[in-house]
Length: 124
Image 1 (spheres, rainbow, N blue to C red):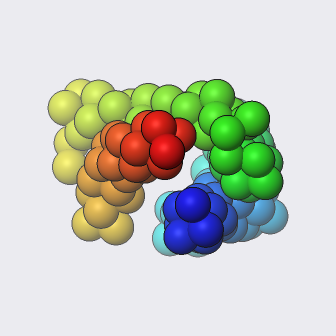
Image 2 (cartoon, one colour):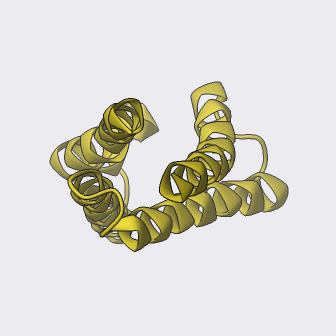
């Protein structure tokens, strides 16, 4: 269970880091420094805040693997849905940057793998 907890904490750092930096730097950071509309920046920073919440949920679940199992499940559901949203974007707008494709693969694979591992840990 300790390795599982460590992995959860490491994974929790991803949305926490990306959320905090998204709040601080906004959408222009991803637009190559070009100006973006206030509406786009506002939406981006809002969603970065949601990402921080997902990171906190992941961290919170690590403190009590059994008692807070649903927090991890909901956080992984949110992360997975975010990956699906990237798929929709790709299909409707076009191929994103390579780092975003990598993120999408992680967002679609890691939640499933982590929840399968969680199920195994909880059965013990």
